[in-house]
Image (cartoon, rainbow, N blue to C red; front, side, top):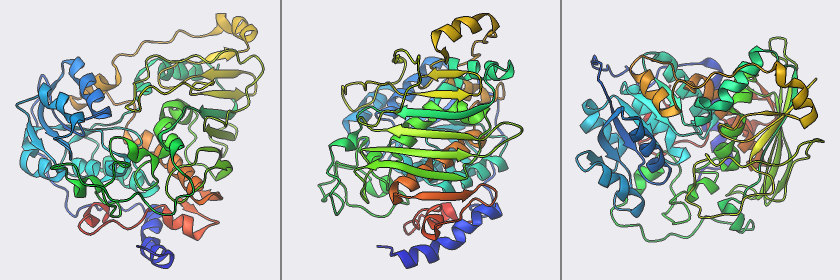
Length: 472
């Protein structure tokens, strides 16, 4: 157990290092062997069940991959069997470190679909090993981890990086870009983002005072590797099979899960960067262990490049709907959103999405690749003849990554773009966890009003034998 005094002492240098920008990771960088152009990209998959299975099937549909290795800490679990059957000749590993050590010459790219807390060490090792990286969102769980990953990718411009918010390769991305360039979207002052569907932790008891009791470990599961650098927890089914998303120690809650699918284009094309204020306006079910039943978080972004300041307000929770503007109309559901392994949960009254307020126009949009519409309908009809043509996507998100591995395209959601958004979400999660308001200096990347929160930028110290991934 790390007490508050030790926590502040141990993380002071790490959090201060955010402003120093040091990029000396793992000592000398491992050289990558010269690669020949392949008709197919040789790829290894890390995390092959649930969401991992979904992205593996998406990569398969491209016809552009040669699968050489599979890695999952729970290879005997039912969730892994379909992919194992798809690629019976691929080498198999439970520990991703052994994958790189023993089969590193067999692949040039990796796709990572593991719990949020393990994204950082796996991705950092992949970059240090000279591999192109596709990793599910959020990029990292803590502010500091995202900073280090952006630095590591910046040092290796020859490597393609892609974060799995597939809306960056769908209609919303190209529409937003075209409408910005045509001056349709301009002078945005406020954004409402909402995700009000039921979540796993809504059935938990917020009065808990300890972590779940230990349960027998599934046969042959590598629990130590599952934990990675996180503080030790006994195995519990309440952490496994997607349940990790509920807990501060392992996941990023509704904000980290859905934020990238709702706010990604807003953040990129409005060039929001990092906020100067993060205020928790509402929270229900606050506790020290798992995410609140509902929350409202205000992120305030300063003026940028002649664009006005922007307030982004996030709403989650089934009983925490945002106010809707006059003429909002219905709430359309995007049928292209990938299914989850939570079973059939009822959809909320208001489907996940956003409302964008500019000085002249108001827009509403959904999640993932959903396009924007102008509201009310009378204004949309008036603007119809002035809207620019939106170009189609040259490739879907998975093809885009593979083409980037071959040097034929650039990825649309590289670490340099998505990493900052991941940091925004980590600040929001800190406000949820501490149930407080934070003042943040985007230039020094320090929290100025709360020493404990400032230390939390780096997260708790890694477990023994995992320190190498964080060394500066």
